[in-house]
Length: 89
Image (cartoon, rainbow, N blue to C red; front, side, top):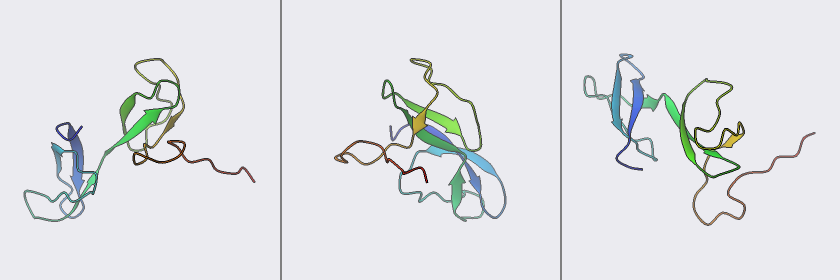
C-alpha cells in the first residue's frame, strides 16, 4: 500500500505531483517545500472489502471488483466493526 503513487496538489503553488501514499499526510512540494493535499482518497467496499482509490469530489463510483456502490473510509486495524455507524436524526 505504501508504494502506490497518489496524486497530490501543492497548497501554495498549485502544482500537482504523484508521490508515494503517506497516511500521516506529511507530503511536501518539490518546488516550494509547502505542504501538499491528496487529490485521491482510499475507500473500502462494504461488500467485498476491496480498497479503491477515488478522486476527491467524485460521485457515483462503484467497486471494480464486485460492482457495489457503497464505500467507507478504511479505519485502523483493531476497530470493532471496521466502519463507523451514524444515527440518522
